[in-house]
Length: 352
Image (tube, rainbow, N blue to C red; front, side, top):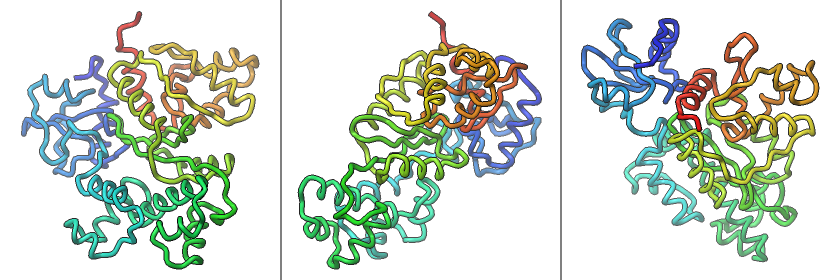
């Protein structure tokens, strides 16, 4: 179990189980004494009594305590991981991106359109049809930029009507196909032990990495699109593969240095704060006051706090390592439960 039992913290965890709060996914696992199984916080099974619960920081700790994994919530898999249906549909989009999906297409894959819509909305925040359309338009833009005539990109995308193609293209990209002369950014979902994250990148750098349940994420993505004046469509790049590898290594050993190239467009002050954050050693914490002092203005604690909150590269720029002067965790866009887990994860690693 947790090395330093804290009854207040366990009550918080129990309440998270009662509420099926996905923000606590990966933060803890709950063992049920009466059944001998252990579960995620979001397990759909009937909630046990508080006195029948043991709480564990990792699935391994639950296994070592003699509990077996629940067959309903599958605690040994990534939280929020892609279902078999979603994986099948994503593969189908890549195999035939020009397809205009009909109910018969879903039935051929053993699903109905309402189930597909619900699964995709829960995982990606948009329907499958919207995902497929965005992917189709992203590929069309690549063809147009490589010199393919617009009419050929239109037909390859499955549109017989030029006006229909232009309208659909403009809704997704924000501009007509013959006026947009820029490379898109690609958004991809990455599973982690603490829940899914979204990565937005091009072929050269990573621009955003956030937990998908971060409050205000949609506004962040829209601000990024407007600031860079570039469309954002589903897809992977070599940079996406790099950050996926970096994240896997970090969760195995938090001392692993992130090597993925990044870009963080912001003001001069924000860039200063973000650069300083990257100097905080793994396993250490700074206060907002100390960060303000290092930024050259001891009276700017509130300003550095706002710069912290504007960070769009979670974990890479470790804003979770900044706490309040009195020792409280302070805020964190990825939830304070995750902040506590990340600090424990880093502080438990052997220090060089």
